Length: 508
Image 1 (cartoon, rainbow, N blue to C red):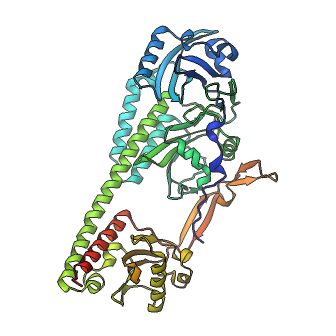
Image 2: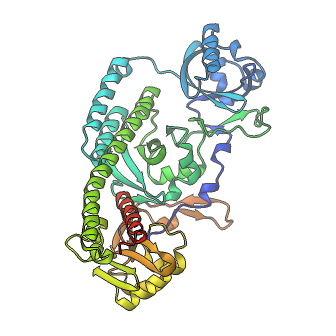
Image 3: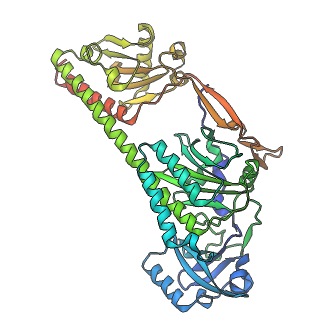
């Protein structure tokens, strides 16, 4: 069995940005940028301003906050410095004036304000205390000698800083399945360390939102969602796009997912690499818990720190690997020139292509001559494989196939020694290739519950539910090989350029 792609087409099409409801831990104002007129509000806005939602619509934001704050907000908006910036705004409600945290962002013609009550400043969230915690966590992460240790350190630091019962680091694979590679948790909680969760658990459009929103928090899965008034945004004549809002409500299926996990609170924070989603910090709490804004800001800062450290370690690893392989490539080139025989120089001497491209065997067809080294299929099987490559390799580029029996059925006969191939086209129209083989590696994938049951539809095929169990569900993956590293693919490209140059210069 090959490892399947569980990225659900259905889950990936649910319009999360048009849910038109918010979580009640905050309030929302939609304001026309042109004149700062309030055009839409969440129905719980009464808490902040002491007036009902219909009374507030079509009034001005300046009616509710001090003139100095209004002036500062306008200044930063005019300078283009408003997106996701936190402000302190003072609203006067039934209990008198109160300070609120306001997160601002732009959406078309609208300025959206997400506001929540500020917690009283205390020793635990003073600037000095937070800065000390941040500096210590940064130092610990930057001292980590490997990506794995950096992730373990980050999970430990963030659990201590945030107060969550569990903090995990969740890394995506090429198919967007996520594996828990680090975990810090309270005793008695079910461990997910080492388990893989199907891509449909965090569907495509949810992953895309992390590129704009650093974190996502659900303080209480049993919340009652708050509607917007009016329901239709008068600026767009549609539902308001809440994709940039932290307060955006959550689909019922996700809340059911949390219930099945026996958690009341969750928070996730992105980890980016090269501007793309690499993984997440995933936090669980067994009781309702709202992490203060200061704590969320720490997560956001530390997600950037861990991202920078991962990128630094990754590129150092690549650089060291590249230097080592380049030395092997140079020796191979010298060897070919010394013997003036391309095939023998690459396959048959002290240094060969297997040391460059980490294969168990290799076969080369050139000038109607088929030569091999290491463990390879027999010559008739190789000739058939080369004919198939000639018919399918139109691009002439280096490529790898890690599940050869899935694309070339006859190879099932020798999958044990050749489940993976790295193909270097020489003259593909003549059937000339250098092919490096890797053997089958039987893998046990430990899924967090059966991924085939990630989404369960009711009889009406409309209502659906997440899986009930997250216990280990093992999948045995066969007829696949380990992937070649990016540096090895680069070396294969360099080797191809050398081979073509050698042939064109007539040295062969």
